[in-house]
Image (cartoon, rainbow, N blue to C red; front, side):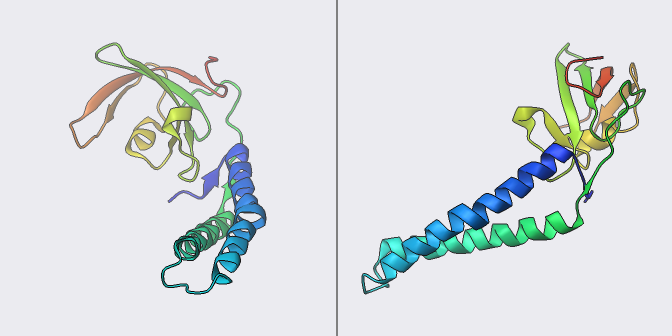
Length: 159
């Protein structure tokens, strides 16, 4: 797994860690404490749910803490990139005329709805180091897809 991340992606992970540690966890701990004070814990739904939620938060904090220790901010892509690299926006067209644009980010920040795919994904790996007008074969479980790179930029929607 790649340990690279964009500065924005690192900030989001740090913010999530801080929120869980300083806001969410204390709130859940207080709820568990209040529920425990009510007596019988075996049938106390608030207590049982609170303990489960606390374990989830602690597991997420541990995971985030371990990743934050090893992540490195990737250098910004060149202003006018000639080939697809980490942090670049790349647009491609498939054989049916569909156009797609994604930014290549780290595995900790992928969000397809926001247009960010992981550099470690099959699509990210297929696009990496390619240039405009290159034909790229993306290997998928449902069959290979051939696409053509139409745009590479350091900023979304700007060639």
